[in-house]
Amino acid sequence: MQAAVKAHRLVTLTGVGGVGKTRLAIEVAERLHDEFPDGVWFFELAAVTDPAAVPDAVAAVLGITQQPGKTVSESVAAALEGRLRLLVLDNCEHVLDAAVTRWTPTGTPSVSTAAPAISARSTW
Image (tube, rainbow, N blue to C red):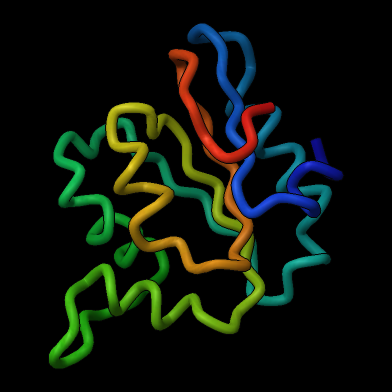
């Protein structure tokens, strides 16, 4: 799993509820912490019901404010650009597109967890 996170921009863990996806994602993030000088960030997205609210939830965790003339998504992407952070997106199956593909800049590794089987760039 650590090798997959290092090699791919997106790694998605899938499985039935209670199988340990979150525990595994957290364990891998802890082991890789030193390789991400701008930090490892955990986002619990189960309570986010509207995909449009994902950027707001992410911005709140990262402490990012909306920049003048930009959307929250653009502000988050601008703040992440050029930084080496690992983003762990938990329980994101219901907002997957908004959580992963819309604003995560190229080069920012992400680990997502989801209960149903989903299609993503790298499913592990």
